[in-house]
Length: 457
Image (tube, rainbow, N blue to C red):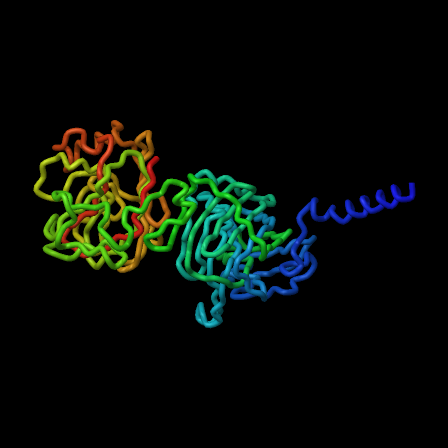
């Protein structure tokens, strides 16, 4: 009986010790002790931070710049979880990861920069997306994962999870997978909590809450991510194991012309293209279609697919990426197909031709204009990321730097009506082939392509 009593007492004591572990998550002492702001400091702006009922509460201040409460300590690989609430759709916030501080930035007011888990209650619903504060702007807009846009709830606590392991960053909100990116910038830095700048009295005095901050820095086990969620991979001409498992294939390996040939040839053009320096580089010629090495096409043909590529233009350049190219049409110029326009809108005259801007960058050439904001277009000489998705039901989408800029239904009455008033009217059933080649255009101007990858749907 004595031994039984001792065993019972031990079991009870063990159960009591396990309650905090098995129950509600506790704040990690090295990150936030739930009572003070020890280990944290305010940077850049003048917004107010205090501890209330075990939570860090940030309050907006009129005419302050973006303000950050950041950790004294820097972190490399980690899994960070917390609960966060934003009380108003007029507000904005975020969680900085592996970030840095430039005291001379913003005219001496100081600048925080680095990747941020976005908290965005505005109508676009980009919470959980990845933004590069003070540096590269948006890296993973939530147009890339429409299904996750409703995961964040305004006015109530939301559980967020951020994984930064190696070059990968993944995010979740309330258990919903949101964003996945691979980025070689920043291997470590501080963690920060943002109170966004406000410029109107209506926005002032709004609060954002952070509690139950838990960070794990050892024995990290990444959580699985769905294969159908698009991965933004900033490592040129590469696929991660996750992308390969999800069915992605590289169309260009960064070194050879394997998988490509001239549109009118059985081999790759002997001149006009360079492919050995990490980019498919079309050389300048006469500034006209097929005036140099000519268009190049994939050996394979594709029906429903998800295609991603990066491009870089020289001043005044004109080129394009075409899809559903059958090579069956007789033409003296470039091969016929649906075209994602790649153009210097400011300097090339084609941007002012056509109808309503349907020959501008990212448009469905001569058919549908792209609706894009200037902030989401990288300057000439910088790499831009494009995406074309053709679903099995013939719904098509164009993206530019992660933002959806147009969509249409291939073969619909609306589509055919547009074809009827375009240059393509002379081609029977234009753009409605079951499958076709992917084409990179030689328009006589210098341009570059890389990280060309495709996944069949």
